Image (cartoon, rainbow, N blue to C red; front, side):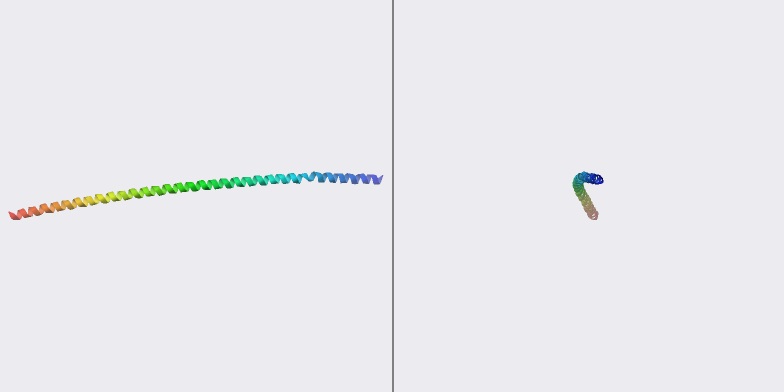
Length: 121
């Protein structure tokens, strides 16, 4: 009778052990599947962040390019305006000098005529 009880106890222990092992085997596979899903999810997140960063960088680079072009155009326009202003001022100054020279010449000729007439008298 003791042998039968011992045999039943051993069979019960083996059954329990087999059941315990049987229950644990699928769990690692489930854990691996979950871990695999997490890795896939993280990989997808990293790709999205990378794509977003690349997109934002390209957008910022385009903004800088546009701003640089605008500044260059503004400088070009300002330089052209300044050159035109200098040209106009120089032309006006030259005209004033020419007018002053003409007035001096006319005055000198008039004065010379007056002196000649005074000498004739």
